[in-house]
Image 1 (tube, rainbow, N blue to C red):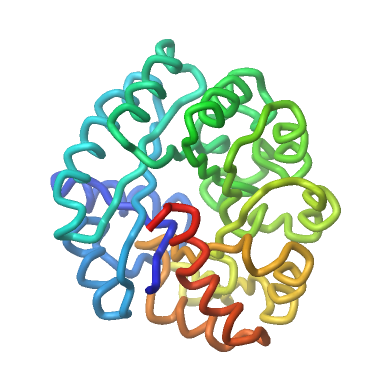
Image 2: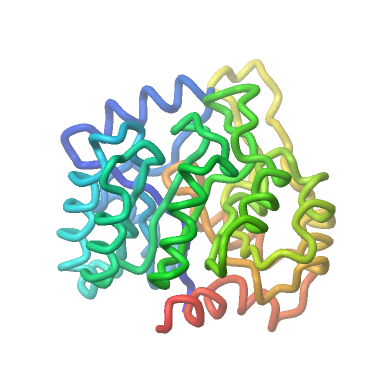
Length: 279
């Protein structure tokens, strides 16, 4: 089973507008149309069996509505094989009640985005969310590292992730983008000895700018990626595409081409997610 643990979709009426805005801000291409149906077509073509949707609330007032929408998507999850997490914002007033509601509705986890939400990951507003999520057994996926759309923002560095994990009780925290997008030289040093999990989203791909005159930006080399896997263990790595920003077929091809064992690749592509999600 192949499980894409890191995808994004938007309601059909705003998908095109949202993608155009984000694409321009990050100077990057997208490979699907940003809708649930577009994701389904792309994932089926790549042989992906299940997708995890990670919605992001950029404003506190969006949280309840986004989570209602996620719950509605999950009503059809065993038809679409798209399972949505909830979202949380550090400034959402009713954060505790909302986390309790998500857990009661059998939501498996939440997504937070320190850069978009302009709050440091080790801020008390996040720490209380992490603490309660851990108590409820919710998985927390966090955008880790820098972000092309917000140059210079240091809200989610590996150091801040380490401090956050040291400040709360047990929580299943997934640090997206292999622990810190474009901060990978800090990941092994700062996160060794923590319980963090990692996903592969947008790490092995080349960032192709919209301006064809600019050269592509190279991310982790296969050798550097494999070194991080060796540091933390393949059992802690989850496959993710960050769709619509990556072609799933290309992402799977890159994982299968890594200098890892077949058992490690199988675990990364789906086995670890199956275990984490209890599938």
